[in-house]
Amino acid sequence: MSAQRRDTRVVTLRCRRARRGAAARLVLTNDRKQTQTARVSKAPAASNENVRKSMQGNKRANTKPELLVRRMLRDLGYPGYRLQWNKVPGRPDIVFPGRKLAIFVNGCFWHRCPVCNPPGVKTHTEYWEAKFRRNVERDARNQEALKHMGWTVEVIWEHELKKKALPETKDRLRQIMRATERP
Ligand SMILES: [Zn+2]
Image (cartoon, rainbow, N blue to C red; front, side):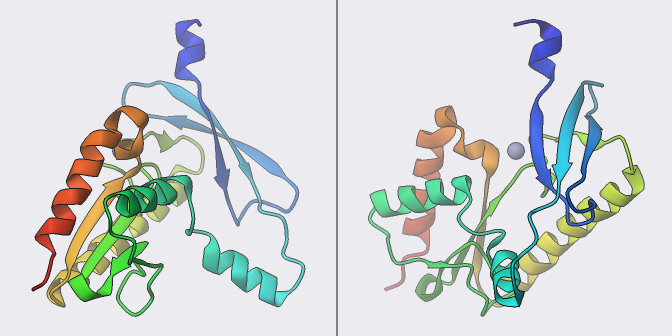
């Protein structure tokens, strides 16, 4: 595989603003000036209002990273989580209400992982940067609000769920669960 080939990854982004049926191509760039091409396509239109609501309500749920975290929790013997719990700020992905534990499973691109430092977007840069900024600010606001309410907040990043990182992440989850045990 050539170096050029290795540096090019195709990622699929859902963009509600993209014209129906149209696919735009975005060029992403990061600090190392590598470029990527991303295909932006619109989700198919919902057939009716209820379906639309359901699609919107579920868009963050049941992602592959979330499923991995949930499986690890079950394996560790903690199956009693709630999902997308909307009774606390930020509707955390995984919640143990009795422990006041909220776990967010964050995608590195949309939530701007500080470790991965994901690429920016070369076209419509201002729009995307504003959107990313809002995501990051919203995350910080929700996490602060939860902590203020006495909750433990943990973020599992997508990169922590790569195959090689899984044992370490499982250990981390085990520690989190032990630390939030209540008498
Ligand atoms: Zn990351």
